[in-house]
Length: 632
Image (cartoon, rainbow, N blue to C red; front, side, top):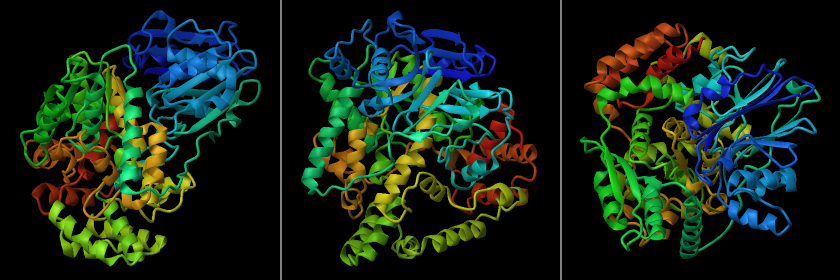
């Protein structure tokens, strides 16, 4: 896990790699080469995880000096790939996965990408042919941003590395900011919230030929298609196969030459990973214990410590608990925003920051986490609407009634509200989207109804835009919902937040649910293996029998790594929230309907309507503008 930078044509500036020193405190590399289109710079900041010797320093060169690599991430099957290449006569001089990646490219070229199991963003410079090859892993676990203009092209692990380059304005991309404010979604397109700064999306690559006009060559191509297969299995068969695939993934994700631990929220996903880690590491049987780090709260409505304690006792882990405090939210927010590069969606990102901070304090350099399962397996309660609509279309009224009653019993969801709301996905796509937008306008004081947003905003929902950009089918049921969330919307955003929070503390975050054989299996499963009655993630619950304590495996509530935001905002943080809203309105006059924003905020803070993440998004937008200097 590292930070990388590469450019063609721009004046070489080592500050472009030094600004992300937090991503790699264990080594620094900077080299400049010549090309017909001007200087070529490669920079690397190293976080040493596998082969921590100097043999893993970068830019890494082959023996001939033709190729140079800068790489961020991990190739988990590097041992198997190395043995395959040794059988072909390749000789290796290090134990690093970086050398395996470089030699794989030399042997197979771009065709080596499907062979890789891991998370990665890398640049390879071919000094003979004067070409730069860039690629990103299947699901975008590791970031890679790009700027291109007549001066040249530049890549970076974080947006801050590209700001200030000639031709990069630092202005707001209003359309993407509108998506963030309206729906809380970001990273759902190749655009960022900065005008002119883009990202290679998960599963994309690009080749830049420095003997031709580089500005005309930056259209990426997909090396990993955003598709899903179709398999039919019984519940027992699906559960067994799921367990095999997740177990294999966790085994690979434990490969490390430094201490490995795990985030533990008490939910199904992180608890499953901890349980499997404990089995493999021998906890309770004389082996090393799994270090777990968890965020807890005195407010019982969001505290998951009883579930964490159950996992700790079941898996015999070495637990570390932190208690994020309300008074630290605004104190830390500016620094977190700088590391995130873009506004973030809720104070749960602050809690995650605190978890990685504690992991660093206790000396754990690699942390496994549960990101990705909810997107593949319809773990969010919003999936019930699509599931129930599909049952209605198929006239499975008995299952529909069971679902309504179990949701009421398990989750307290009103029967009347379910009957009313689950019909929306049945409507034609255009009409359904129109009604949803009209509903937002009527219920949220038209706070986004300004000339600026009408002119530059996104008329479609963020989910519609995400599926359209990748050529995915419209979201109509659990299958298409899971595809869009995995490839195009929620997951990319969550991975962004996790990458920045972990790397801010020089920690590598690994996500075993995103091993591609597991993802491909999950997306190919039929809808009935995901939501069944009032259960979410049914295949995981069945597959993790005996891995999870029953109190966790059978829990139906979903807190989603929540903080007591409602209590904090209506209580000790109310004044700071109101002040933050006013600062945002003053910084970006005309962007939002100020009266509508104030009315919405007052109703939420007074308790006359539910308090959601909208207020934090408005506040954090202003913080972003102030800390990063973003102009409208």
